[in-house]
Image (cartoon, rainbow, N blue to C red; front, side, top):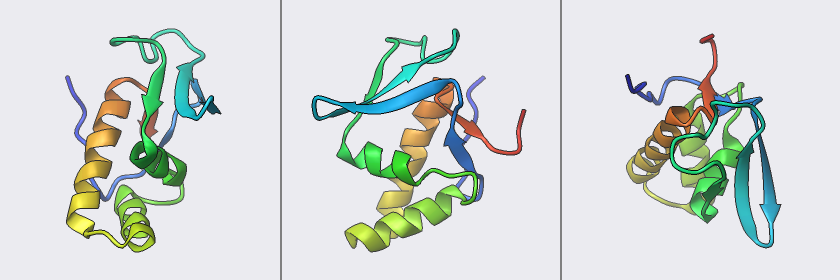
Length: 103
């Protein structure tokens, strides 16, 4: 069953992955079994994805992340919220991020 992503929820990177920039590409590598196993083990993010990833924090909701990005990039909040939800949905499905407050 696929988890839904909500703007008022808090999402943060899982402790079961490491993220690094390698040769100009931002990659996320699982360090525990069962993480990232869906299609390929290494997951890469484009520049937009990396911007979202960098702002994910146990201290702020996804709406806060989108709001910060809309100010930083001077973009429409609704579009940025949609991009944030889409990326977090994929990362949650792969167990690369977790919903804070859930076990």
